[in-house]
Length: 107
Length: 121
Image (tube, rainbow over all chains, first blue to last red; front, side):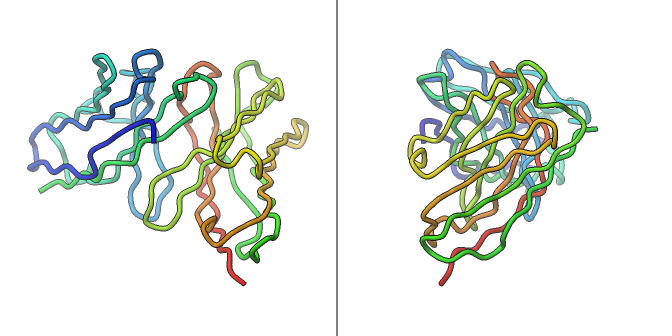
């Protein structure tokens, strides 16, 4: 995959967690973030680096620095436990790619 | 309210051709910038982008699957069809279609519930 994510991250309830996504194409293109819970379709939680779709809590925020994008959850809740995928355009700009996903565990 | 729903066979045999239909409502594929994407997810594995078709019939495909994929649209019927040839057990996955509201941004903001396809003889 052209986008690299840590396979797993954990956070204590109420604490802050940062999920990262690395790829050269992120220098030029915005990242999208999706949350997927078991047995469910993915849900868009962040796009165009730091835009939240309607209904997504404001504890979610996005950022980018160089070739690394991040999804930050401030005050993680039990319901935030899920798999998170980043997505962006590939290095050519013509195609889409997903990262390998990060499993977030809320302790 | 935008909704999408995937339909098609749940079982296919190796070497057969898979045809999946995405039927949507709440938007038009004749609107400038709009697209419909296809994504799949093998059991226990990551999401994999397959293809996208845009309002102007521009089609893009995953390089690793390009030779096997075709995506078409029927704007008046609000449907997008994905065809994948020469199916293999490794193609066993849940297949999703999704609304892509902006040609220039990667986000797909509404997804179907997915349809599970098993490839087995």
